[in-house]
Length: 226
Image 1 (cartoon, rainbow, N blue to C red):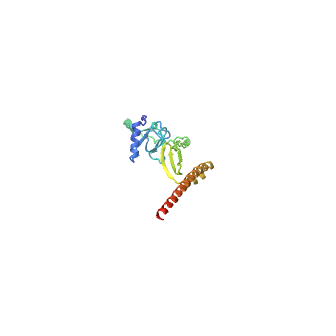
Image 2: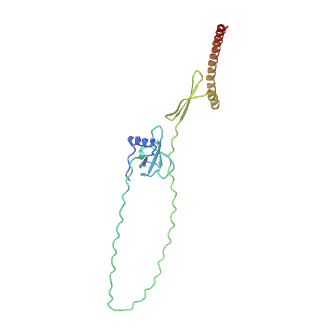
Image 3: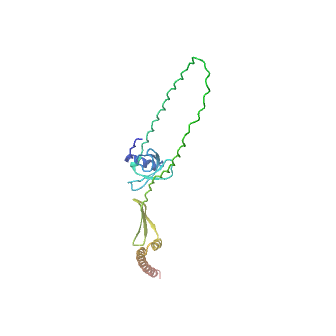
């Protein structure tokens, strides 16, 4: 079977477009594919990040596993079918020649010959089970969780999976942050508690200021209405 060309950048864009439209595109394996027969087909089910190495997830036809492959191991060109060789014609059998007996005679009955002894057939070799092809495990992206706080004690969280940010600036409550920090590490809990104490002191000072302004406004109101 002729070796098929690997996936070009244009082929990769077409495959991503088909997959994005909800139609898993078909690909075929080249002779560079590991663990899969060259020329066999499969369906692209996902693209992982970053786009390098074995980042194309493919489910081979007739299987349930999703394996990772590189562009060099796949092709978008369907391999041609191998030509079927015509069966060789059997040579015609020669016709038996007729024999002529010149003088009549009484033929003797044929003697029966004992069948030749045949040696016992050697035992058939036991076929060893083929080793299963090594499967490539899909790479798991690293996950980064970042907590951020403001001077007023407001907290947000960002989550990054590999190179893709899945959550950005999602607000969470201060008690939830304090409880999670206590479960992680004492130093983490101490750092979070320092930020929370600073925010409490700032809000307490603001409350005292507002209370003083309220009392002053109440006295002014009492003088006007007294």
